[in-house]
Figure 1 (cartoon, rainbow, N blue to C red):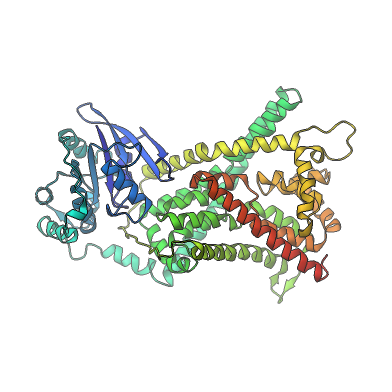
Figure 2: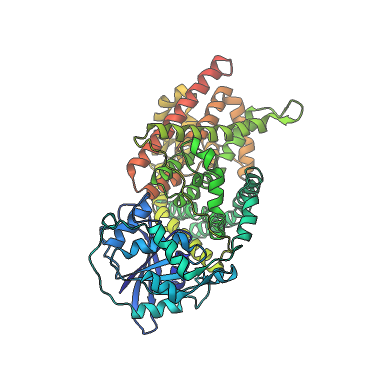
Amino acid sequence: MRIALIGNPNSGKTALFNLLTGSRQKVANYTGVTVERKEGRMRLPNGQDIAVLDLPGAYSLHPTSLDEAIARDVCRGFYPGEGKPDVLVCVVDATNLQLHLRFALELKQLGTPIVVALNQMDAAEKAGIKIDIDTLQSALGLPVVPTVAVRSNGAAALAKALERVELSHIPDVPASLEPIDLHREARAVLAKAVVMPQQSTKVDDALDRWLLHPVFGLLILASILFVMFQAVYAWATPMMDGIEWIMGWIGGQVSSWLPAGPLRGLIVEGIIAGTGSVLVFLPQILILFLFILALEESGYLPRAAFLMDRLMFKAGLSGRSFIPLLSSFACAVPGIMATRSIQDPRDRLATIMVAPLMTCSARLPVYALLIGAFIPQQKVLGVLNLQGLVLFGLYFAGILSALLVSWVMKRWRRDRGEHMLMLELPSYRVPTLRDVLIGLQERAMIFLKRVGGIILALTVLLWFLLNFPAAPADFAGPAIDYSYAGRIGHFLTGVFAPVGFNWQICIALIPGMAAREVVVASLGTVYAVQAANDDATAQALSQIVANQWSLATALSLLVWFIYAPQCISTLATIRRETRSWKQTAIALIYLFALAYGASLLTYQIASFLGAG
């Protein structure tokens, strides 16, 4: 037997799925789209082993989003490669029955056997909501069982009900041929079976008065995001340093075992270093999603989207885009992955495309090098630091550019309709540790399996370009200059001469594709800087570029890094999340065009003003 869990978002459907299947679940994507497909196994009390599918959240069988369209097609057996479920388990929130029962009545018209899981019964009892289950069952004409997804035995009644269900189907009845006022029917059912207390939402209303306030709500949101943002930086840094140390130690051990040569270089600098470049992002991803999952489970995340929607909408995005874009300041990879919370495919794609414009932490070493070398440490207006103002300007330019690009995309798209943000504001609740941990495990595996593979492959390819052909013994320059990467860099000098880049910069941009912060170390290699550590390399390099580069070149390179698609990990993530090489190519081309155009303008103006 194969059952499918379906219900409105925030009904506790996924928590119930986790309870039923435990660790016996797998996550993939539906064919041809990026919507997650979760399937697991559970064993009924009679020993029968059944498959359980967790369908995307939906409000109606008349879809307004890709998630709803998939849920509808799977329920009707129309989705390619997906058989029609034998039983639908309609999960409804016992604290919000007026909205959720309407969907149950709509599903009833499909003719598939249905069991209604009356979830969050514990919360309903605490709120003083009295539900006569027998009367509700009679009024709906469907079996109704109470569930509490946050308790270990909270689905026992559901498991017994699934044993008794009769697997008989009647043909689908299109809803358009059944002119039923589902809202009126739901109200009639509620009047018969449910008694609502007069002050059932007192706590929620009290919290919303502050959390949704146009001033205090934004201040609270800013405080929460500040803590989250700092955590992604501060908490992740020790773990990222630890991963880098471990991978460096493993590389050192392997280097001591293997003789010098191409094999050792491939294993140490290609595979081990490439694996480290994948794993080093994991702490940021887990910390970011720890906050996102906790905020979503608590019921606050939809309210944050509501608060930011008006501002984001003017730029062609939605309130749900806010947290993914903010997350991209730490790293675009987890930021792009976080767009999965955006239901509207158009808004999700727009957010993915502009996320790389947020100034990620990997650009800071380059910014620090160039600002320290060319921008004097002096006060502005007596209190402001000029170097700090330049850094702020770089961040602000990225934010403004992202908003402008999304605004242009909104005007460019053929779909000119206004996609309104439709959100259910669920009751506040305490996140469950089990569901948060399962969610973190899912995100980690998605990253390692879907994104890590392509990053590792491209990193090995980059290692090959940097190391072959090997420089002959009598070659006087740095070995990188003789490699394929060096030759590509020299070839690119003609392309980048109008923006003021010399051949050293062009060569350093090649390994910089693995990660932007590698550019500093690559420049140190090209300029043959010998130093004990990265800090010493940066200090020595700062003196060299200050003496050999013009201010116009430095400013041009700073502007280049605002826009340039200089990160394989980001491009790999865009490819995996959009499942489209076309969209990845569009992102690559438009970011390169922005970078080249802005750098060209900066260099030419600065040179004209005498900074050359």
